[in-house]
Image 1 (cartoon, helix red, strand yellow):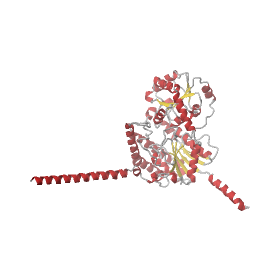
Image 2 (cartoon, rainbow, N blue to C red):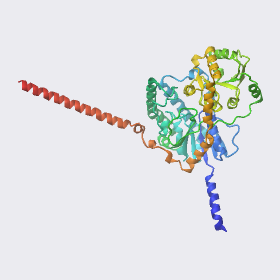
Image 3 (tube, helix red, strand yellow):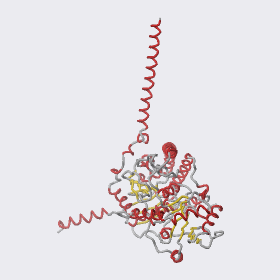
Image 4 (cartoon, rainbow, N blue to C red):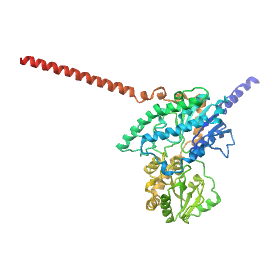
Length: 516
């Protein structure tokens, strides 16, 4: 009887092993609410799949997942420090000097890494002797934190809040041709002019110099100070199992990806919920439609310069549509009767309403992806980061227009609103993109869960990694080959020149001898 039951018992034990709960550590120190939306959605998906999740983050979850296990290690004070940097919108604009870009990103990354590593709660975790199967790190200028995966004897997965670009391609060896892929901080269109390609190329070169000779050494110095045992950061960063990209072909131009880069863009977007009663009535009864206006979770509309705000209000006052504005204060001077204010608004649910005709946004990646998902054309007012690049892309793909902050006026805003609302091509283009975004074999969050479990099943999935990780950066870009090649050409030219010089001198002597 026992012999007959052995095959059944084996199958049961196999299924138990297959569905074994994994211990997953998420490290997400960035105090940006928009980043947390992504981080929380990913970790929630893993918890709902039955895994044991620990989350290091500045935020706390009010409604933890019902399945799996959910533990939070809160980085106190991070949110307050973050908010201080976003009070002056004019100061946030991307610097034109590329060296200053590297200076600011280095400063941000070093602060995030050090504040995370020295946090008492993180130090307690480091001293706890706990082990994890996977460490998922948001890849946002905190390369030193990759050492936590090796410290906890775990596989390393990176979560990039943006698409493939020069800031993340290098760690997995993804092609990053400066002629094809503009840096997101420069805000160039994909089809660049000669000058833009020239500047983009040198920006890429400067980035690698900065990484290898300035940023990485400092990051390594920081983590060595706080880790209980020494772990070389360069060793940990070359041991990446997988990188998730918050991107999708519906949101950007198609790009090449190495096998261990997985696109999951839009994974944070949920099916629309019923709106609060007051908003539901307002939107349902908007006979002329609704214009939704939000500057996102980091930027606050109340911090807009007064002159800019007044020009926007002049344009809104002339509209027949209802204006629904995310305004973070109790009072808006000169508020028109058709403008309705809320300190917080359920953005995804609002964009899903059929009466929403246009979305005025800062052009952040989450807002852009939500607009595409729900098929709403946009006017983008980009301020910093990747926002200008996203706005350029929306304009190129025909579902949005750019309104630079310096060009905001009553007349300009009116013209653009009339254009994207009255010209059917903008809604047609964005709805075509929406169909592409919806047309997937499985939900993107299910894709993410599958690949995390895949990495665990295949013990780090080394078979997905390209040989780039075995090469030095100068070997990958063949700088040693070019150096030797041009060196040999230079030596050959010198030899030819020397031989020619000797030949000419000899020839002159022969001529002189003949003359005498």
